[in-house]
Amino acid sequence: MRRALVSVGLALSAAAVWQSFRRVEVLGTSMAPALLPGDRLVVMGRPWLRQPWPQPGAVIAVRDPRQPDRILNKRVAELHRPTGTLDVVGDAPSASTDSRTFGSVPRSSIVGRAVYRYAPAGRSGPAPWPAEYDQA
Image: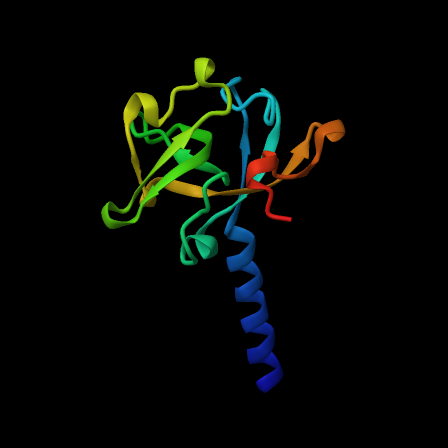
């Protein structure tokens, strides 16, 4: 009986972890040169959202405040903890629609933090970080 409970617990935990990851595609040039159209990212969602706020420089997937069914890939620029919001920006300002256009976004609009680029094959690897935000 105990073995069955452990197996069920492990299966439920694995399912929860699996569902916390989501795949998103980069569609525009707002994050160039770090991310290019056609790049595909793995973003880590829910468990990460219970942890501390994303750090400035983190690449996140966030719901577009103008079209909530649309997902934007942006970099965290600034946190506004008292109001529960954050500013997100693209790496290529002239090609980016971001907080400079639509203002701060609520923390609840975060889909997840980009953790890995899995395609295209020649560009796969951990989420890109500019030197000033390097976490290593």
